[in-house]
Image 1: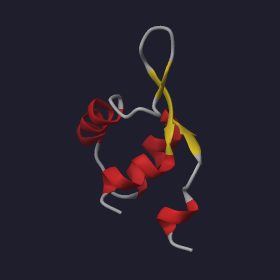
Image 2 (image 1 turned 90 degrees about the vertical axis):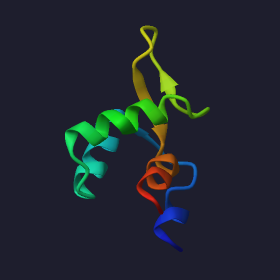
Image 3 (image 1 turned 135 degrees about the horizontal axis):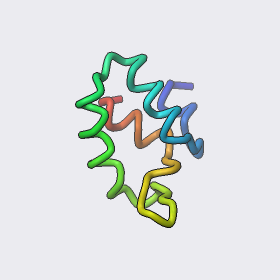
Length: 66
């Protein structure tokens, strides 16, 4: 099983995504770019105010280039 396969069907929080991106060397300003991209993904969950709450782990890995 690959790293990408292991993320199939897994939902993570925005905080967890930030942690994972930091672990992969993504800086704060790049995290803002990530959020601008990920908000348009169909499985990204938003709260009542439009803030990102959860997303698919695979979407994070795709953004990282996996």
